[in-house]
Amino acid sequence: MNTLLFPVILAGGKGERFWPLSRKDRPKQFLSLDGSSRSLLQATADRLLALGGDWDSLWVITSSQIAEGVRQQLPDLPVQNLLIESEGRDTAAAVAWTSLEIKQRYGEDAIIGFFPADHWIADQKAFAHTLSAATQLAASTAAIVTLGIKPTFPSIGYGYIEQGEKIGSFNELPAYHVNRFTEKPNRETAETFLSTGRFSWNSGMFVFRAGVVLKELHTHAPEIIEPLEQHGPDIYPQLPKKSIDYALMEKTTLAYVLPVDFGWDDLGDWNAIERLLKTEETPNVELATHVGLDTHGSIIYASNPEDVVVTIGLEDVVIVRDRNVTLVVKKERTQEIKQILKILQSDSRFTNLL
Image 1 (cartoon, rainbow, N blue to C red):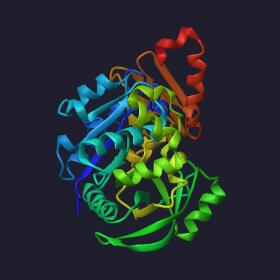
Image 2 (image 1 turned 60 degrees about the vertical axis):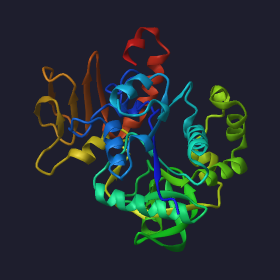
Image 3 (image 1 turned 180 degrees about the horizontal axis):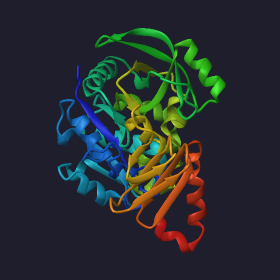
Image 4 (image 1 turned 45 degrees about the vertical axis):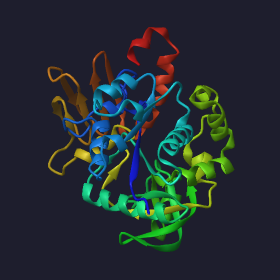
């Protein structure tokens, strides 16, 4: 039984909700957000290499706009293991193309794992234990395995997975058939989900055999997989833009979930910095030279240590100073940063801010 995992890093995202620190020339995955010297992309590669593989087994798929940055960040990655999308078409196309390439090189029984480049994992040992279980399940069963994160609060920003029938244990972790996926719910629904004990957050991490996922893509997303098989990556800009959740996971009957708890955050917006770094002893999260009066519950960031941020009488705000932009936003409205970017994109005066 083949249990070698080929990990793939999904590194094509823009990280728009971390603007203005995340920009076209320096997207979120190139940043360090936890105070370490390693970027999110580098930390993800470190984490996956620690599973026991080497650079020859690690793959990255990214966009043409930032491919050179990926090469600089991961100089040991073999050139043939870097897939460059001519145009971003979301995760379904990325999964389909990479799975085809790995199948062609290693066969349909090759076990593939997909991992976003911008996640934070607290417990590497527990993560490795979980991936061993997922690999065992994928090797022994026609399964598309997803990692479900144990919820710690009724989030309305994450998708949810409802576990169904237990099918067994792998590496001492219970595995369940997936009953359903639910996109971001309202708070009342999220609270109901948590009360049942049957729901996990959808981490966006998947493990499966190449042949299994390609067969399921033929069944549920032929409009993506068939053009790729017939024309290769040249057809990429013409593929429909769909997430792997929408194109496949919500439709397949081969979805299984491992509910896990290894300390996880998808670092979706500036509020994630507070979840990572806030302590009870400090009134704010300060990654800047900050002088404040009556300022509480805020996140304050400045990329230039010589810049001084002064605040008076503020509560629950995010202040970010980077290069030629200062952002001030209520913490509860950070999701709306993407709307501001659309306004900036429509005005030629602001193209240098993106």
